[in-house]
Length: 124
Image (cartoon, rainbow, N blue to C red):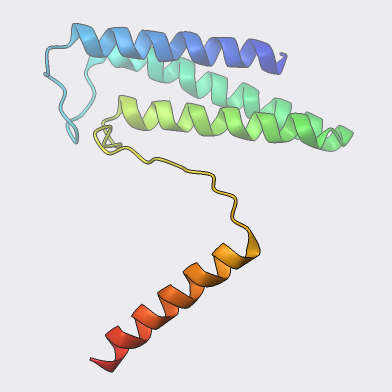
């Protein structure tokens, strides 16, 4: 199975998960067990995870590390879906990742300011 097929299947399962959540009117809160309507999706996700793992192992053996890394990314997405489906992830918290490039002078000033504040805190 190709990685693009696995990606498409994961996306389809994400859509199914979203639809299931919309259909449920808050009956499955975080930390509560899954109901019977989510079990088939969970089994499909587990099957996808096994297939993706198999593809990863084949690509590693052939030396295609870029494809293996892509498989690892897909496995992470599948695990995230399983955790969301089981109510193990708190979807209310959001992590923002910001990529910032600083010149050496600015980086040095930031580091010096941080160290000065840290020394003041340690002195107290």
